[in-house]
Image (cartoon, rainbow, N blue to C red; front, side, top):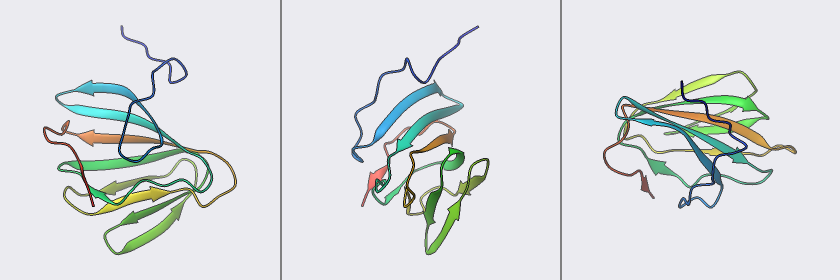
Length: 112
């Protein structure tokens, strides 16, 4: 049994400059934990695989292609591969998001 606690995982360097922690990394899938402080956002980018975002805490504005939607805790949204997307926290409290990529990308996301 492998157990990981998000509080104990190291922060991974990333081009977005936000707190990202890798929780699971296998060829079948990758799961990352992102914390966005109020006013923080990811840079618009494309991911070469399908991505699902599960909102753990806070309000997150999800931008996928030309669509924009504010999601609350306990919602999941899917983003197809190779579509420009990003997340932003326009609220007043920290937002926490699980990012599930399946399968694990062989090539890095492309920041635009």
